[in-house]
Length: 182
Image 1 (cartoon, rainbow, N blue to C red):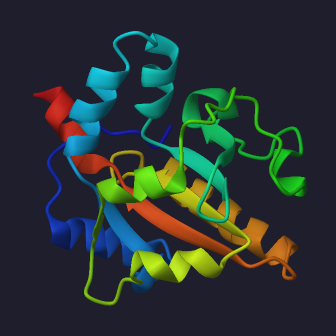
Image 2: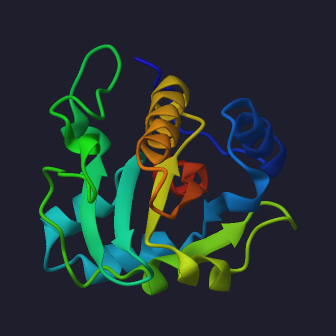
């Protein structure tokens, strides 16, 4: 199903996979390991939220640099052998009509503090202030094929709405899951 055991990925492997998937270098990030400790700490009282935020493949759709409007997770996408991110037409509207309850305390400005640019070409976070919408897309090398499908789906989504300024931040999650495997 395109899933391998999470393993420590060096930056070279992540960058190679990023290039293979067509991820623009100026929008490519890794998730800082502090994300893991913060989610585990803050999720002590809300296990559903914690489990949702710990999924390796996610689409977080934000109104500009503010509130989370919709959230799609690999565990709710459905489909076999490949995840179907637009199975019920969720990606035919702005904002997408995703099935996961949205926690409005999740803000774009809080999420970007966990992002580490993969290259020197990455946009500064000020760049994202001028968008109608910002999308944080979590992907991983260990979910290779499923990540490729998700990335292609979101790139197609952007093309469906050429009149909207949407930015996508592609965030690799392999470091987090390699730590969890230890």
